[in-house]
Image (cartoon, rainbow, N blue to C red):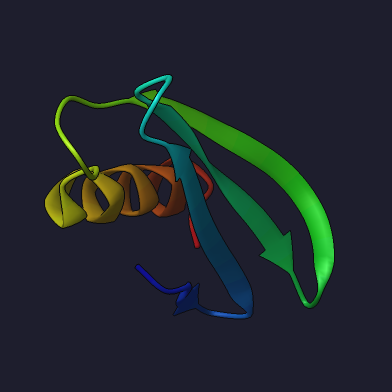
Length: 63
């Protein structure tokens, strides 16, 4: 699962299968902004979950 780019922002997901959690690191023009934490079930987080979290973040921050 690679990075997602939107309007100068980069969203880099990473996750732990053992812990069943992850985070999306948010960068703006290369600088770290914040971390969006999430939980998932199974071997990998669902790509739709990542997209939904990124879309929600963009909506909330008017990106």
